[in-house]
Length: 247
Image (cartoon, rainbow, N blue to C red; front, side, top):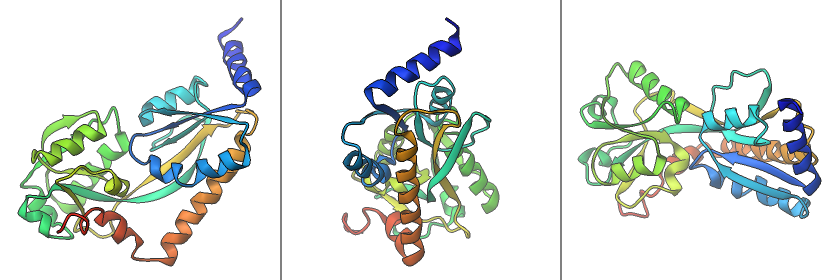
């Protein structure tokens, strides 16, 4: 049996038992768990969802190998075999130790931020996040002093909590930052954004996959409409634990 035939046999096996394999980048699970997935589970209670946590590059590779059916990831996606839609658009924010004097400012001036140690996310793990940091530095005419490179979101945030430096991520982290960390806007207009994408193979004919994607697109439109109705929504999202933690 050829490799391609094996791949199709594996996909047909998943189809028979009604399983859709969904992968997500670490962190923004709440954007999906709170809406798209519960809605699908209510409509199709007999279909199983297998959830996996994978980096964006890992998801692209898994889609090409047919190891997953759907990926929530960040670009770039350069394969003609993969289609994608935008699930949500997220502003970039900076995570700062609560004890730093600069944490009292919102937005945070890039010139001041550039004097502090920077905690980077490896490009191999999160190319979109890594590249947007370079873009911010160029737009602001500054150079960030990277003192620590990490390959894990929680490691980066815990390093910020330990006072080792600042980290630039997207606004979804507001709900998962550890104690001692605050999120702030950057003093840069327009604020850079990163897209959370929903990706899938163009030729995937797995049962119920089209219904899953239809539901995801519906909630993507709802998220965008909510932001359009409430211009302050992004400010509230990025502020995160500011009020809860007394600053």
